[in-house]
Image 1 (spheres, rainbow, N blue to C red):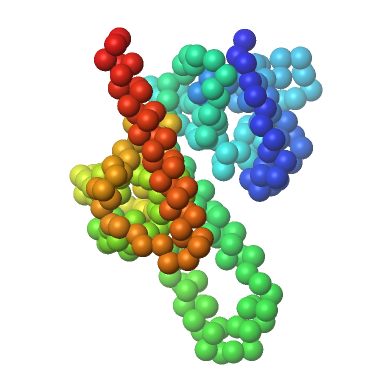
Image 2 (cartoon, rainbow, N blue to C red):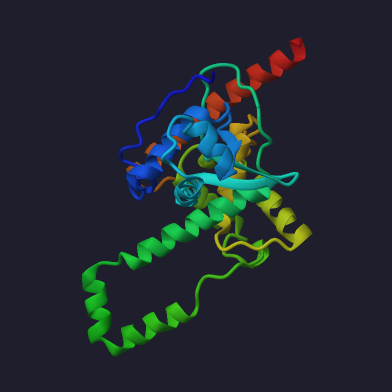
Length: 270
């Protein structure tokens, strides 16, 4: 029986969108998935294993509730079987054991890109009333607004994106805070470029994609971090907030270096 820490998600915007039944399914999935947050995505299996004593609940209901978890759960297929993974599950209660195959990197990136696009669409639809009123009374603004609607954000190659500028990428990752601010930007810049060029991969938001690379490496203990004195783009803090961020990033970088050194020593001993 897996051990679980049920985190407080009462302030989560994504969970707040769920109905009571959908949140109940999410709670039961948290109690049922393996140590990596993975489980069957077949509604029949979920009905049987998550609601074993509730005959009134149907497979059709489970399928409907499951479809509402698209911003929280990654759905993927492995060898013809459907699986799911609760994104950023991060259970570290004991030694982890895998019971189900993990999603591919492309599955994770597609999930992150979709969530980012949904968040941007939500932000645009919730624009302040004053701005909407201003566009209604100003023909020029109204025309520009319609023009933007006719030109939705499209998938592009990494080399065609604004982040094919390592200085801009460095600044954006620095603003995101750890672990992104301590990541070796040149490594992840090259990784995104090679991945995009090799298979013609296109994304709407390449910053989110690169952040996905960094987060996955951190979760797997493979994060490439900056070494002291070898930062690719030196960032000079201009405000007290920037200086505070830089101090925090430096502390996290040193902690990551110590952890990496300790892991290297353990591997040598073993």
